[in-house]
Length: 77
Image 1 (cartoon, helix red, strand yellow):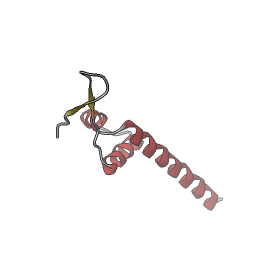
Image 2 (tube, one colour):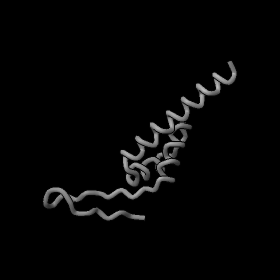
Image 3 (cartoon, one colour):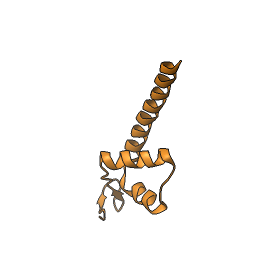
Image 4 (spheres, one colour):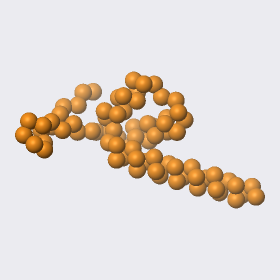
C-alpha cells in the first residue's frame, strides 16, 4: 500500500500524509513494550504511523501499566 505525497507547504515541497489506524498504532506500541520487532515492520510503521499518535498511545499505555503495577502492589500488601 503505497502512499502518495501531497503537495503542501512551500512550492515544490511534498508532504507525506500518514494514514495509520488506531489498531496499527496500538500494535506498534505493544510490540515496542515487548521489545520484539522486525526491522522491516519497524520501518513500515515509521512511514505509516503519525508520531504524535504513537507518543500519545505510548503515554497512555505507560500510565495504565504503572497504574496496574501500583494497584497490584496495593492489593498484595
